[in-house]
Image (cartoon, rainbow, N blue to C red; front, side):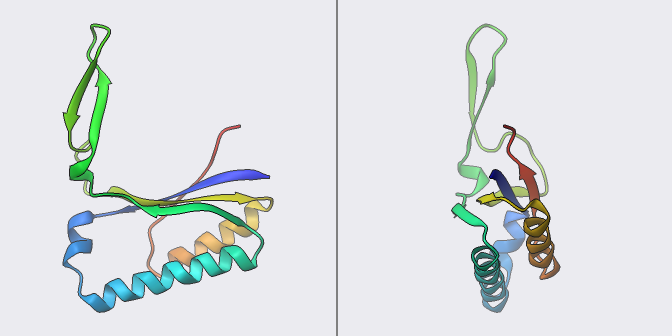
Length: 116
């Protein structure tokens, strides 16, 4: 059994400006993906949206043995990670196929196998 992280990058500002029917379409897509994972034998360990990146706290070495702590995201980018799925699976090819179907509905995802 291997564990996979499915990252959900998206432009936060654009999501906030979408009409309600687009939000509902996205929710239905996620529900279908979760159903696909369950019926195809993948174990959904946890799934969660993340708080807005503006509420993040970034920490990096300060070069003097301490940490530089700042409010906000680590880097300025057009897309932020807005959520994730953590999945256990014995069949990477099948999980990949489920992810491709999810992406084909308009979702942008990144599939990463956790290092063992």
